[in-house]
Image (cartoon, rainbow, N blue to C red; front, side, top):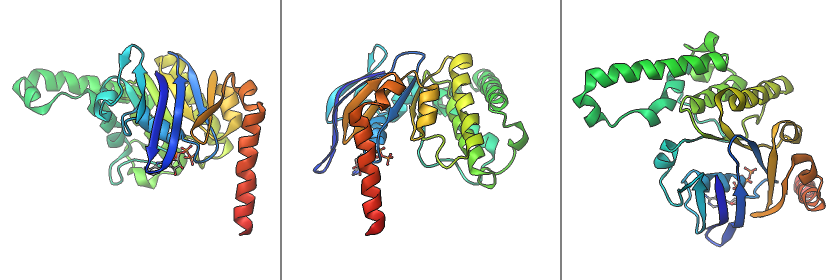
Length: 259
Ligand SMILES: Nc1ncnc2c1ncn2[C@@H]1O[C@H](COP(=O)(O)OP(=O)(O)OP(=O)(O)O)[C@@H](O)[C@H]1O
């Protein structure tokens, strides 16, 4: 995916001020930056939730600028959200099955050839869902109501739901938020395996710098809606502008906590 000159404002606030980002096929790409720097807004632009005010978004060779989210999802872009977006009251399995909806046919047409298609589709959907449940090691809790399992596992279910869509590009918005070290390592392993075994390109928004430097091939660092560094993770985060941006945030937090 390549984004060129992306601008996006909310009222008078310029959340993105001409951002260029290129995610190459097959890589694990990190999008980092202090709170409020524009990471989620950028992902919303990429996935069609917020069309940019200026700039173009290409998914490999196709210009997808301004396309609605459902159309972009059908082209192979899946995402998880910063805050969990699972359906309470449904089981783990049903939540994961919902991730297949991008591949389901329009109902009127499907009903015409219902018996032929429905059966074939059902088999295909089940096969991929079972494969992903295995891959994400969720067999033991597949029938549990999703709200009753621990947060770390709920995050894994969300990742599974995104993977059953068989995306070409998977965008993960802070998949490790609120996790302990062991859970973080688990998710990091799954991300690496998703790339190796399933050929998925990954864009990762992540605050844990140890994870970013361990698994990302390249990163872009945003601050106040602008790119302040990019490239190999260790080199990029060691740049003075990046250190300054993060130190500024910590200082602001200290002042805030004293007020
Ligand atoms: N829907 C919106 N309406 C108004 N302002 C918004 C909206 N979405 C984001 N913003 C503002 O745009 C700026 C960038 O926010 P964004 O959520 O993209 O940052 P972020 O880097 O993802 O932050 P965090 O790490 O805290 O999630 C912030 O100042 C935020 O308040």
